[in-house]
Image 1 (cartoon, rainbow, N blue to C red):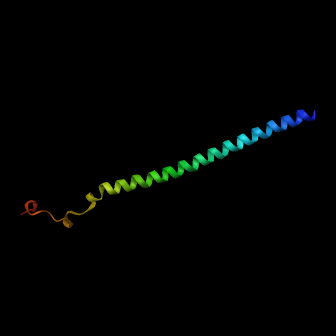
Image 2 (image 1 turned 90 degrees about the vertical axis):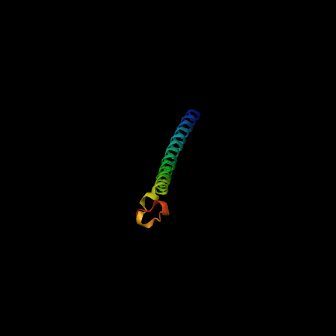
Image 3 (image 1 turned 180 degrees about the horizontal axis):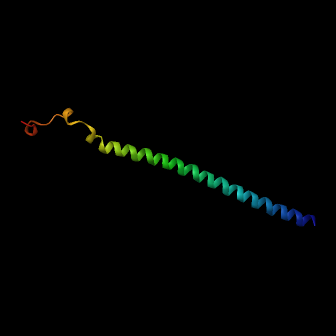
Length: 71
């Protein structure tokens, strides 16, 4: 009977360890997804501003070539 009880306890410990490991894996995945989403947001904002910064400069600050100046 003792051997059977030991076997059952061992199986339960293995199941508990597997469940705990799965929880840790899911938590790790969640944190990495959050980090990736934060990184992706900064990169997409940076590329947006790099792409459209020229459009935000007022025309009065730009010096046009002589042949394009208005008369």
